[in-house]
Amino acid sequence: MSDPIRTQLIWNRLLAIVEEQAQTLMRAAFSTVVREAGDLSAGVFDTGGRMLAQAVTGTPGHVNAMAASVAKFLHRYPLRSLVPGDVLLTNDPWDGTGHLNDFTVVTPVWRANACVGLFASTSHIADVGGRGFGPDAGEVFEEGINIPISKLFDAGVLNETLMRIVAANVRDPQVAEGDLYSLTACNDTGARQLLETMDDFGLNSLDTPGAEILEISGRAMREEISAVPDGEYGYRMRIDGYDQPVDLAVTVRVEGDSLCVDFTGTSPESPHGINVPLPYTQAYATFGVRCLVGNEVPNNAGSLAAVEVTAPEGSILNARPPRAVSARHAIGQMLPDVVLGALDKALPGRTPAEGASCIWNPVFLGTGGGDNRENDGFVINPIFNGGTGARSAKDGLSTTAFPSGVRTTPTEVNEVTSPLVIWRKEYRADSGGAGRYRGGLGQTIELSHAEGAGFYVSRMFDRVRHAARGRAGGSDGMRGRVYLRLADGSERELRGKGKDMVPPGATLVMQTPGGGGMGDAETRDPAAVSRDLQAGLVTKTQ
Image (cartoon, rainbow, N blue to C red):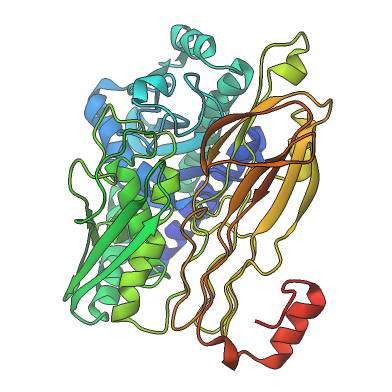
């Protein structure tokens, strides 16, 4: 019989190891979106490719999609074909985490000439060539370099040909190469600490404690599902899409300890780069369930297997190659709101209203037409956030990344890594939907080129035409807006998605959306109204 205390101690060590793995990645990363915003994932896997533990640092899209990817690595390179020093790599959207900008690196861990586990990590690289990070491509071939599952290191020897190919196809090769090394380094950190743990506990293999961890997690998750009333619960949400709206439809079916999320009825694939590979859909849909059901159960292969997620092949949530997928997050990050909307019918009064959901992560690029490389050839990918929906007994959170968890990139970092100046960054008053509990606020950002030059902006924004809806009588949040203030003082509206040039002397203004309100605004605590007015969060009694 196993010792539950010993198993718990091993589990705690695994959690500490993967968190140190993630922190190593952040400290070593070249990309600011990884180093400053935490757009990454890290985890440890058993020899069957099942995720045992994940780092708290990271995003659900990366973590849960990466959880499904390691088995694909092992299908391409079975353990019997690998040797110490091998390191595997891919950014294939269907084998990795959904688009070409995410690179996943997998490192087997060896002990006494036997593989005892694997570490995997993923990080976002701002530029992978092609059209650049954005929604405008018609096929994945246009979106950048696509590396199938390959060896980055072969028996400890760097695949220099692969590195040269990567460097020749991206706009900032130093950052791309540096990030691949940082992914390798963080896995090495995890591997060293895992071997120390195995020495401390006298383990020759992770198979037995790993199986126990997964069995306990799976059983706990199924018990949580059993507490949800049986039935079918549907919800629909319309969002902006690219040039026409996208309908996201879900049916959550609960029967005993079984829970299935079915996206039948969702819009078909798009001719633009907003399509979502199924692993990314499964990642965020599962996260939506876990926000309400089993949120204290460890997130690993055991608990993830308890939730089934399906989407019709050829729908925008199960896009087939070679569909363009670069901006898949603009759709995929909406899925927790959709799933929570359905679960509100099963567990009323516990879910938040809809929020901004999709991060606003523009890509700013130099025109490349001048003599100053620093000012003309830059590429940065900062993160801005809108407001979350009001909760059942609390206001929503302002300028907060839910569900992605990707933090806002500091203004100082954005300015030091580009020739751009951010002139204004502040809460957007009145943007949260009114209610007994107010929706979280968005923000207003104004920026321009320090020398008055032009530059490009690639946008993947949503909630510009379709607001986050309130719940239980709460008002909708304010829609987002993006426009140019031209040198002559006039304004020109921009679409939420697409790539445009910001002309010389112009200022780009982005106003992120607010979250929906919860409940009747007439029942809001007068003291809360007074505090909001005094703080300038609202400008009138709502």
